[in-house]
Amino acid sequence: MKKNMIICLFLIFYVSLIFTEDIWEDNFETETGWVLSGEFEIDTPQGLGGDYGYPDPSAAYEGLKVLGVDLNGLGYYPGDYENNLTDREYYAISPPVDCSEYIDVQLSFMNWLNVEQPAYDHAYIDISNDNGSSWIEIWTNNTVITDNNWAQENYDISNIADLNSNVRIRFSIGSTDYSWQYSGWNIDNLIVTGTSVDFGAIGGAVSDAQTGDPIHNAQIINQFGFTSSNENGNFLLTNIPEGIRSITVIALGYLDFYLDNIEVFADDTTHVICELEIDPNIPPEPQNLSAEIFDENNVHLWWDEPEYSDDILLAYNVYKNGIVIQSVLNEEYDDLNLINGIYYYFVTAVYDTGTSLPSNEVEVEINVSNVNNDQLTITNCQLTNYPNPFNPETTISYSLKDNVKVLLKIYNIKGQKVRNLVDEVLPAGEHTVIWDGRDSTDKRVGSGIYFYKLRAGDFQKVKKMILLK
Image (tube, rainbow, N blue to C red):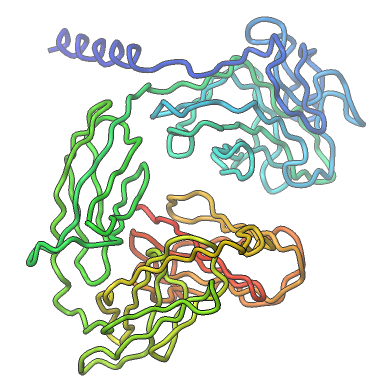
């Protein structure tokens, strides 16, 4: 029995050696492009500091140099970090690490850290997968730390770094209080590892299980990406790592469809069939949607009321290219100042009991030779969210060039409002707000596709995000 167990453990270790590769490493002996702030340095440690806790090491773990805080006796407290630092005031940011062909990405390094308890001082490790535009905290001290020897630290950063090409690592110190200085970070032999993967694709068709009719604008979700079905119901999810995968399909008026155990092969496409069942409780949809162009680059939409229902009709949601753009009370809507291109519209009815199936879809092409698309594109605001997909929360960021009234709302795939996030006049500049995946009653919402809609003065933009659980 013991012999078999030893063989099994050896095989597991051997397999991990085969498939785990070093993506990037730094022993700090040569310049690699770290961005340093405050008293962070790359140099030879001299055993300085330690007014409280222990001093820096007197030698690197290997070689001569380390990444550390105040290795040479800077500031008022030689060898230690300073008092009254702001949040993450001292930082060291790695160069970008290309993890685009790896999964199960791990971070490890040799560590020697001294920092006061978090009621007073803070040390952090953060990871970015968008080249430093936004950061996710993966560690902070939850007690006082007083190291007097080197020890290896390991962190699973796969949910942030997998398949991303611009991963950065940030070590930081701050905030700190007005007393008790410690020697801070000392880091050596940093390594990022992962499992190399090849990529395939998942393709298929989405249709009505009863009629066989294709379903347009169904949302196909996988942990590695998402897409929508076209007018023929077809879809293609690309850049999916080989292995056993799953998808979720969501469409207006249909029950959610799940498909597991999809085997994805390198450089190949696995085809699947997704037959969706109509939601038996779905109320009737709007009828006879029509469209016409007026004044060259504006679209007028109109439609008939749904067939009679006992449910109470509250409003209509107007969709353009699969994304809800407006809720209206009447059976018409004008979409104004469009740039040249092809647009697909449909409308759903919103009842007290839920949302209907889509109306018929209409196609409109704007093609005006004397219209400058750049002039028509509104550029006074930028809108993004990170992470996306996310769980359990995501940060929505937007920049304003003017002081303006801002409305930021969350909608589900049925076009129902989930929550108001912002409703106030804000100054020009960068703004962020966190959505924690809860609705207006503070209940957690389910997995799926959500839209966040920003209105800033006359400008409005809608973007898509995915909540995965």
